[in-house]
Length: 377
Image 1 (cartoon, one colour):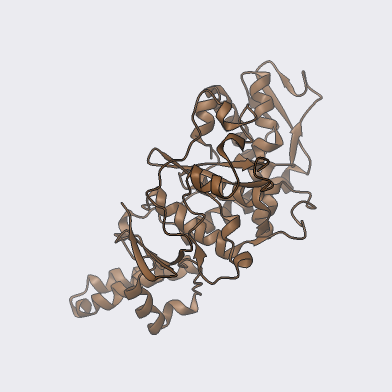
Image 2 (cartoon, helix red, strand yellow):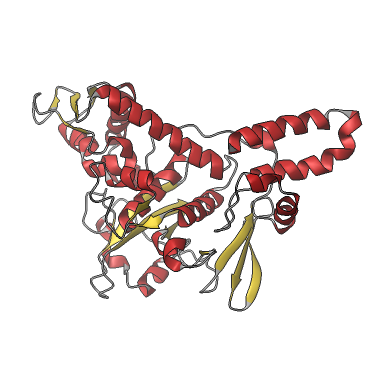
């Protein structure tokens, strides 16, 4: 509905702008087109009906959640079957990544073999945790085919066994790809910076997902990330993994992390680790879920956190884990230092997002002292 509305309004706008008779209306139509691109702003839902309400259009164009840049800069997102974090490229051989991409290509066509350089790379590719984070629709739907060679691998070939009929899997995969791109194209513009992509998807998930108190995801026969996506609910590791996957789909470097919180007795928790412009940050969507906080605006306390912020919450750096790494704790990784020290985007404690303007590079927020603007680069 949103895409049809955008296409219709954009076409009408371009027709009017090229006509001398209607040039006087160009200002109004610019506002309407901007309104068609306005996305839910930090917990404030906007329905398709509200896009045609003059009061809503006026309020949002002037208050500014997200405004229009040059529409020609925007390219629709397409599904990326090769979503992969550079954190893994740093810590694993390049042929692991290439083998995994070969697996994804085979799955996209329903094939049962893929080119793979080694048994070790094959085991990485077929590991449920790898599929859960990097190709969630296939998790628990494929397994090693032990009818061939050494547990499914032989002579540079990896063998796949589908747990459901291949035709059924392909239908499931097609629907997943379509729904992922729908989420991205309804919330993110391709010209957004990585910071803006992180923000709008943080807003989207915080506003639309719920904590899975009844463990529905855990009882599902599907993989954890895929079930979280399908049910729109999950616990921390499922929500953090899905958020990382959506970010990778739109080009942001992200990976799921977790911490046992043993040193502080804080208890197990999981979230997402991201890299923006060479700096690392923690983002904890689960802690900001509106369904849990009871607020109407999304908390910014858990957005772009530092190691010190995580330490204060009881999750010390020494216990940080990256499940897809080949070490137990992240600080044991010799290839990369998983630290987050930059506090450029930290706002006062108790800050809640009330909107954002990606043209003016402004995040609007409120705290106990009132309403404010945060300008970013």
